[in-house]
Amino acid sequence: MANGQIFFLVTVLSMLTCNLLAEPFSEDAQGQLQDFCRRFSHRTAIISNRLYIDGGFVNFNPLDQNPTNYTNTDLFYADLLNTTEGMPTMMVPPKKNATVPSVAGGTLWVDWANNVFYAFGGYFPDSSPLPFVTWLYNVAQESWTSVSTRGNSTYVAYGMAAIAADAGVGYYLGGYHDNQTQNGWSTNRLYTSNLVAFDMNTRTYTNTSGPDDQGRGEGLSVFIPASTSGLLIFFGGVVQDPSTGETSGVSMAEIGIYDIATSQWYIQNTTGEVPEQRTRFCGGATWPEDKSSFNIYIYGGLRPNGVNINGSTAFDDLYILTLPAFVWIKWYPISPGTSYPHHSLTCDVINGTQMIVMGGTFPNSSQCDVPMVYGMHNANLGQNNPENAEWITFTLNFPPYTVPPAIISVVGGTSKGGANVTQPVNSSASYDYYLFQRPYKVTTRSPTPTTSSSPAASTSASTSNLSRGALVGAIVGAVIGGILLGLAALGGFVLPQKSWRKLQADTQQEVTEQDKMVDDRKGKGTGAAAELEAEQMAELPNGQQDARELWSAPVELPADTDETSHGP
Image (tube, rainbow, N blue to C red; front, side, top):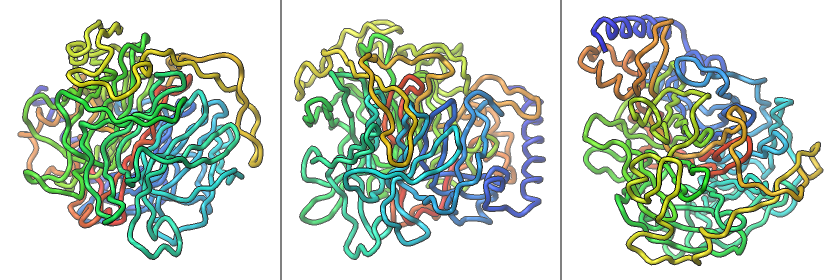
């Protein structure tokens, strides 16, 4: 980047910063957009070409003067059909009714057949927990409704969420109960080992036993269309010893599998560049058309129990887990450099090709998280751009997913698929061989009018292979993972097509200590130092899905009660 361009960028950003600091902030929706600094512990959902953001916490700019974590009581959405500064344009629908809880550490289950989503789980940061209610948001009507359900459930925070989109079932593995999820709770925090399933066709909750008797949470779960009815893949986070109540990190070398058709659990070992143990990370899954490999991208996270290693408790890295090879690949960064560790963010996969990483809190920094684009960063999952960059600006008309070279080098085939590794590498399979061999075929659902007491949808006899559908319509949220985005347009001045990280590297020597707020606006900002002193926060993935309208399900990282800051 030429020095003149850098000077222009810094000058314009400085002017914007001065204007930003001129007025006091407001906690309402417009105030959040005007004075945005950070967002974390929220939950997301992609539906009708919109990326919805609900709950969690926000920080206001400047962070050093406004270190308080404010509960986000509004519903926002990023319009995926329009972009501003190289990312989806942020919008505010009608104000959220005060009777609808604003929680942290929950999830949103999307029912694409009926153009609605359900809010589940989370904890109450500002008030005593309310009695359990299932809330539905109707996208067409832009309204919330409490709905009648069958079966029993309670509020639970930071479980691992996923959605079997074609079947219309939301899943939530583990999570914890304490005095912020259940009124009158008087004992220590208790993680559950159960798997909650919510059938959106009948609005029925069921609880089944998990893989063992250990409570667990703060990890990731994604859905992939393998085996006859799909598989839930889960890993990371923490487990709780049922006898002592102590929590410990889960090795990222151990991958859990749940076969929906048979209700069988498996634990499979992995090889490759296995990531460090982590919680509150995010990620999402994608695959080529032939489904010869299923590739799960994860980003960021927090070390279990906030352990500090080399001056940081969090991560700034991106890994790929490719199945059924069960091999980990470190994808970013490849070489050492400036890093911005953060956690408690969300990941949403769009059309199987891009993953928007939103928010997070930055333990090592007090800068803001790219306020001009409200903390959104976009990963190019197939590296199909002229620079082979991992991070780029968001483009709706993006080419189909291509398997990147790093995965091809492990599983073979080409960018279009054709992987020839069909079982775990250097490790015996713990699961039944057919899991990745039988074709996935699930009856699709037909939309039906819904009421607060009627089932959400009926089923038809046709089958689905989880096609992406039209480019505009094929959008799916994937909770977990995150980083910085690529290009941006500023006041008519279009920056070269490179990631914000690269832009930061280009301009770093041009920016002085007095320009920290300017730096923040370029995506360098991070969370407040007071962030999670004693507690961890993470928003677990909403799950991973593949519906005709969305390509991956959103996943949100867990967050805890002592969250005091949020980062880039």
